[in-house]
Each structure stands twice: as C-alpha cells, then as structure tokens.
Length: 191
Image (cartoon, rainbow, N blue to C red):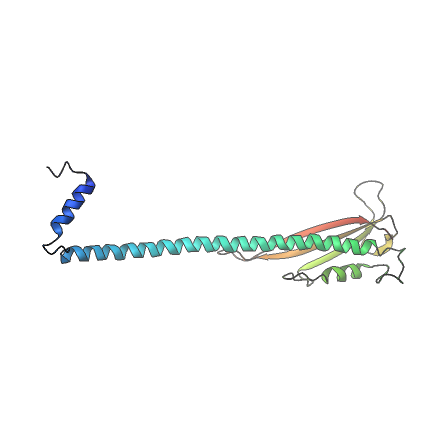
C-alpha cells in the first residue's frame, strides 16, 4: 500500500511506528521535540488565560460600578420622596404639640434627608445637595411662584424637594469620572 493513499491519521500512525525503537519507546530526539512543543503550548495557554482574565475582571468591575451608580440613584429618588413627605405634614397648619420641626423650614428638610443614612452614600454637602421649594397652587403648569423659603407652606400649596448627588465611577482602565444624578419629588401640603 502506498503512503500517499493513506489518510493523514494513518500516515501519522505509520510515522510514529517508524520512530519507535525495538523497546517500544520513542527515540531521544523525538521525545525532546514533543517536550518543547508541550512547553510552547503551556506558555500559549498561560497567555490566553491572562488575556481572558483581564477582560473578565474589567467586565466584572464595570458591572459593580454601574450597580453602585444605580444604587445611588435609587437612594436619591427615595430621599427626595422622603423629604417631600417630611415637608407636607409640617406646613403652616401643623400642631407643634404633636409633631417636631413644625412648620418645617429648608434646613429642617435638608437635615432630615441627609440624616436618612443609607450605607455607602456620602451625605456631605460637597457631594449631595437638598433643595426644598414651596410653591403656590398653580393656575398654570408648571408652577411659577416658588421660593426656597417656606413662604407658601399653607395647606393646598405644593412642596418640591430636589436631591442631587455626585456618583464617583472608577471603571478599570478609565480615569475616575463623576456622574451627577438628580431626583425631584413634588406633593401637596396637607397640614
């Protein structure tokens, strides 16, 4: 049977049989060649693993940072709603015998919101700002008569609380950025 008619697998098998000595082991030069090839393959696998791990870790840390950003946005919206709820029950008609901070001023609302204390949220004034506004009942939308003092804190008027937070994003291989998230809540003063 001719060697050219054999399939590649059979030709390799015949070649390896020719290289074997009488004792059944590979000759020394064939063994050294296979060791060098194995070393090259293990080096290639190590390099491929390093590149794959680098991409995987960058993706993992990116997902974690984006999750922290979403957590901060969730906190900001919750804080704005809580600040508005705090202010709507502390209008000009509230009874100081039953409720503290009556009537609520801008600093009262701001202190209440910053005191909510979510873990991982920096509530210092350089990172988070709370802006309460009291508005007259609008005859047109949106309200045009708004003030940062509690001038219009009568029942039936509106209170708006805007919370702004600077979220630091430290993504791998990218310089640290700050993204500003903001949320506004508006409700009618009840008392």
